[in-house]
Amino acid sequence: MESKLPHVGTSIFSQMTGLANQYQAINLSQGFPEFDAPDFLKTRLAQYSEQGFNQYSPSSGMSALQSQIAALVARRYNQTVEPESTVTVTSGATEALFVAIQAITQVGDEVIVFDPAYDSYAPAIELAGGKAIHIALRAPDFRIDWQQVTNALSDKTRAIIINTPHNPSAKIISQSDVAQLKNLLIKHNLLLISDEVYEHMTFDGQRHFSALLDEEIFARSFVISSFGKTFHCTGWKMGYCVAPKNLSAEFRKVHQYVTFSSFTPAQLALADMLKEHAEHVDELAQFYQQKRDTLVQALQPSRFEILPSEGTYFLLLDYSAISQLDDVAFCEYLVKEVGVAAIPLSVFYDMPPEDKIIRLCFAKHTDTLLRAAEKLCSL
Ligand code: PMP
Ligand code: GLN
Image (cartoon, rainbow, N blue to C red; front, top):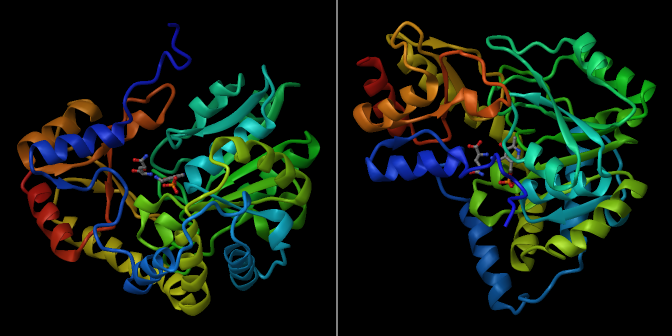
């Protein structure tokens, strides 16, 4: 059988977590929290299941959760969205990204993707019969050259995907980039897929730019987020998409044939969590900023060059003063010989640069971060 994704192998996240387990290394590779979901959330999940909420939810989501997502949007971004027609609950942000891409991509369409990019974007575009047009952003500042983006547009360009705060660079999109993006979207009549799964994790007082904040941008956007990141429950695979009514209608046509609906008891538990524990969301930035600072401080004596982390739960380290190995080989060495698992930056590129940079996830207990830093400082 001919493969539909001939260039795709097993994801680096599965590979590195597998190696971390095999070598009993400290796993700072795959992005997931070491700490558990809040007790309140777990208790509500169990209660709703016990009470018999175990059948399909409406395809676009339980109305209690749609309403709480709309309330979250109102509280965080001061925007009014109509829950019933614009909010769709999905099985993780991954499903929302896949569905949005399938919904808008016709065979031959082009979609602009900024590399380094989350690994699911390009395969989803390919499966829709489209073509990912990769624009490489280079370390250390990952600056967007808007002239290059303009030059990459063609009459087949359908959409742009952005991710802010950004995995893996940990950058937040700047105001001037937002202005350039808006210009381009309007001038060339493009759609935007805005991956905002780390929306509540921004540091040093920086504000998250949500596509929901600008009416003209939102009019052409799919805004995607994930409860896995916000409530430390990545294994629940719960997320959502907010999009204007016309785009949501197309999104829902695809969503109903991908999963139809998502885990009902989790939807109800998440609705209660959002309603009764809004402070969890508001405290997340501070919570992760402390983790970032703990790791950065513990790595100060090391020979790594630490790149700035403005948001997400990731930190990039340049190891050129330590080794000349390429980043995949260096990560293998780290996991096998040093006892720390990391992710090589090059895997997020279509055309990998030769940078010597790795990504660490700091969604871990202080003790774990300190033990990992001690090992890395020995290099
Ligand atoms: N987008 C980005 C940038 C991510 O880092 C992740 C999670 N690794 C996702 C999407 C997927 O989120 P979920 O686990 O909710 O599918
Ligand atoms: N988003 C996570 C990361 O970047 C991994 C998610 C996954 O394993 N698919 O590490």
